[in-house]
Structures are given as C-alpha cells and as structure tokens.
Amino acid sequence: MKISRRKMLSHSFFMAIGSFFIPISCTSDAVSGNKHLSKGLDLIHKVLSRPLDVAISHLNKCLDSNEIDLENHEGLQDYINSLVTVFFSHHNGEDEILFPTFEKKIKDADFSKLKQQHKELHPTVEQIKNRINIDNPSVNNYREIRKLLKETKVLWIKHRDEEEKIVELSMEPTISSNEQIELNDKLSKHGQDMSEPATLILPFLIYNLEGSDRDEFTSDMPWILKRFIVPVIWKSKWSKMKPFLLT
Ligand SMILES: [Fe+2]
Ligand SMILES: [Fe+2]
Image (cartoon, rainbow, N blue to C red; front, side):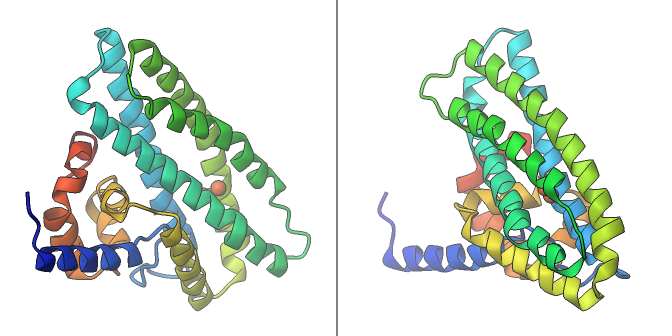
C-alpha cells in the first residue's frame, strides 16, 4: 500500500503530540485538596496492577485448555511489553526523581526498603519480557510466564501498598500543592523519554483505567489526542491489545 507524503507527515505530527503527553505520573490539576502526589501514584499503580490480573487470567484459560491462543498472542505480547515498559519507566522515575527529592527534604529519610523492592522486582519482570518475546510460543513457555507474573504480583502488591502509605503519610504532607504539581510534571516528562512506542503505551495507559480514574488521568491531555488520535488514528497500531483493555 502506498502512503502519501501528506499522510506520513500527519502521522509523524500525531506521533510527536502523543509522545509529548504520556503521563507516567498524573499531572492533573483537577485533583481536589493537597493530594496531587498520592492521587497520581494511585492512578499509575492501578495501570500497573490490572494487567497482571488480566494476563494471568488469560494464561489460566490457555493453560486450562492446554493450548496457545494464537489469535491473541501478538496482542498479549504488545500488552505485556507495554506493561514492562511502563513498569521500568515508573520505577526509574521514582529512583531518579521522587526518592531523591524527599531525601533532600526530609531529615533522616530512608527509602532503602522501597528501592530494594524495586531491585527485587526487576529481574523477574525482565524474565517475563524475555519469555513473551520468543518466536515460537509453547504451552510450557506460557506456564513459565504465568509463574513469573504471579511472583511479580506478590512482590508488587507488597511494594505498592507500602509505597502508597509512605507517600501519603510521610512525603506528601511536607510539600505544597504547587510543589506536588511540579514534581508530578517532572516525573511525567522523565517517563516520556522511556515510553516508546507511544502508539502502544498511550492506549495501554488510558484503557487500563475506566470511569472517573480515566477522566482524571487524561484531564490534561488535549481533546484531539484522547478523542481522535489515540482511538482513531492509532487504532490499527494498538488494536491487537484490545481484548485485554477496557475500551
Ligand atoms: Fe515504587
Ligand atoms: Fe510506584
């Protein structure tokens, strides 16, 4: 199929806009009160939590019937690869920006446990990435991926719950509402560089949330991006993930 130069240019333009608005943290000003940081964390943690359950449940179905779901295998690959990308990007932002900010601000702050939990999670997540990207999927491979996802889920839930408590009770009250918005902006911009391709990552972020969570997460995105570019222009890029998303 021949693609016109005009179509290619508009596609590059939409790619650029999309990449610019990947919110690895919530940058919304719509959050009420002095809770920007914990609300942003809650939303991105939801984006990271749901896919673990969705992928495990899909693999359960395949393993119960002892068959690979070939029709949805590429979609599962895109979905799990997006999860891994957002996972690493989010943790990197916390290690490089969030924790150092409060280590400077709070005397005797100690985030070593949270940092250690990141380190414990990463080798398992890396193994999931390696396993899902092999050329010829097998039932045994799916079984191994399910095992790794379950291990990740156990470590993740413990880390997520502890981190949310620390952010809400120890970090957030020490900074103003404006400082929280600035920090969320910094985290979001940091995440953009690590979140390629935008055509998969943005729909992955948006469509793993629903209702008021999705509204809040996307409140700072331009209308054209959330109502036209992602759902219409980019649809062919992410549609294989559709069975796993809340579209
Ligand atoms: Fe974390
Ligand atoms: Fe986190």
